[in-house]
Length: 148
Image (cartoon, rainbow, N blue to C red; front, side, top):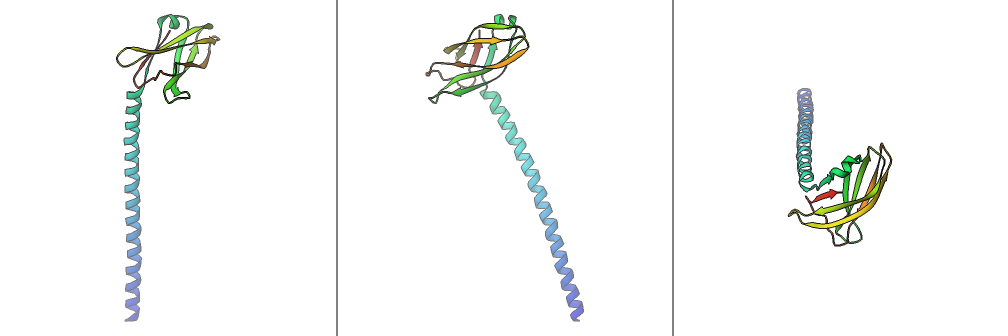
């Protein structure tokens, strides 16, 4: 009788452990699925916000005809908390040397700032250039920036 009781208790113990392991596996897999879904959801939100907040950069026809192309850009703050520094990546299809002006327009189409910098680049090269605006200029979301 003791033997049967011992065997029965051992079987119950092992089956409970097996059940607990399967339950943990299910919970872990469920957590992975939720984590993947949440990551995809937040990636989608992030991309939507990025697209909504981007400024529009336009290069003048004159500069395009001189062999300039734009690449990436960033907008940063100087010493105050206003976003008044534009860093623009320019690609040179031809040799180039000239003063270039960046003009910023708000969502209503009003000019809110302009900055000029000397741009020098050799054919088939590229580089970053900074346009520093007046400290009162605050380049906002969805502003338009024309490079001429």
